[in-house]
Length: 119
Image (cartoon, rainbow, N blue to C red; front, side):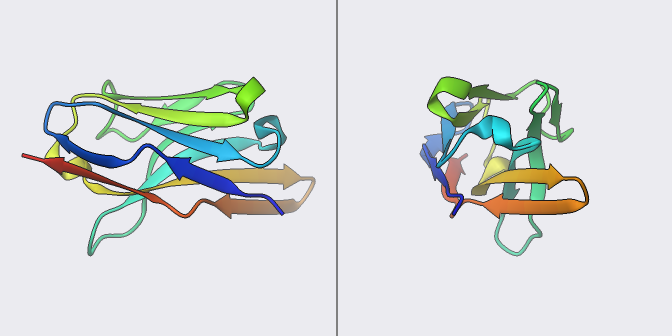
């Protein structure tokens, strides 16, 4: 059973930084794509950043230039470095992994970690 476990959330002042970690129970290279999503109260879950197994990163416009997604293959961990945080970044952040084997697509989620940015 695949498990994704997030950590690193917390309370930070606007303008500050946090680094989120997502540890996978197996090799992260077994995922075609790993990413971070977030969900603020009363809003739908939205994409924050994704990273393909080939190393291509993509970001939501709202976080471009402030957030960076990266990975450590040896530690089976994906990171989200968040700088210049804003109050509107407050949300529960979820780690996501997608595997595609021929026509079968499997998706995995972590339990989420709360990020609160005070203004």
